[in-house]
Structures are given as structure tokens and as C-alpha cells.
Amino acid sequence: MKHLYLSALFLLGLTSCQIGGLTSGYSHLSATQKERVVTLEDDIDAIHDFSKVYTVSINQVRQYIESHDRVLLYDYTPFCRSTYCVSPSALVSQCKDKGINVLVISNIYDDIFKQKHTTFPMLMIDTKQFSTKWRAKYHDLFYLPLTGHTDKELNYASFHYFEKGKYIKSFKSPNDI
Image (tube, rainbow, N blue to C red; front, side):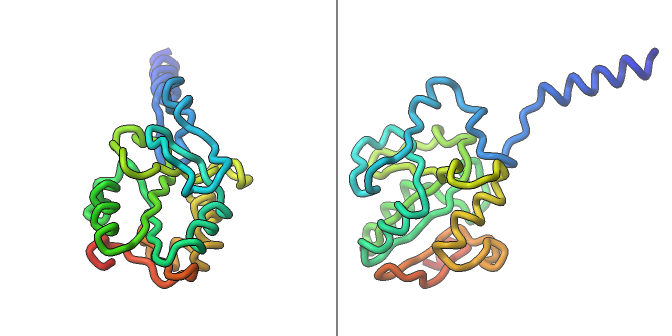
């Protein structure tokens, strides 16, 4: 009987846990937060309301890259605390001074609304365009057509630089840009 009781407690504990990072995390958002997630129907340049999170397709990002001379894609993980992860606001400001356009593209919804962004749009990979719920899989399927490399081949770099529509290089550290 004691083993049955302990097993039941263990299973109850597992079902009440929320494991973040494996999938998009959309189901972890509150109803109010879900209302602020919008599928972008227009070009990225047309975004003027920075209070929302816009899901974007590969084609929308590709069109943006092709229409700007210098573009940096920041593969943003909101809850990341590594030294390689930076504040999107600071990165956008730093790159703007260098004449580089930045797209901050989150790969997960967890903690996405904790970061304040009032001068640039917060984008999210439109996971509906892929036939998987797993973050690692849709992440590679999103960036491979843009960079021509898998995440592993790029040594898990988060900063992808393009000039005149062409992929140039990826950087692991923002200091190397």
C-alpha cells in the first residue's frame, strides 16, 4: 500500500509540472498574453504596434533580408541567462548605430512578455508552418533555408548576419558582430 501511495504522489507531481523549452511554450501563456500574439499578414516593415508578438514565416523574413542592405537576425531565447544572450533592446540600439537592421526572432514563448520592447517588433517563428511541435526541430527548419546551415553546423550561434540578401556569417557572441 505504501508503494502505491508513493507512486500516486510521484505521478501527481509529474502531471503538475510544467516543462519549458521542449516545445514553443504557447500553451504556457495566459489568455491575455495569447491575445497579444498575432500572425503577421503583411511585411515586417509594416509593423508599427510594438506591444504585440508577431509570428512570422520564412518567406517574410527572407523578403525583409532581401530588401535591406545589412540585416542581423537575433535567434532570441527569452529566458536565456548565458553571456551569449543579450538584451534585444541593447542589441538593436548598438546595431542601429552601425547601420545594421535587426530582427529579434524568438524561438519560444516562455518569458517573451518579460522583455520590454518599444522601438522594434518582437517576432516569433510561426510554428504552424512546420509539421512538428518540437522546438529544436522547427528551429532548424526555420533557419536552414535562411542560412544554409543547421544549428549544429553553426555551433549554436544566435546571431546571423546578411548583406544585400546574402547570408555572410553567424556569431555566437554579440561582441564579435
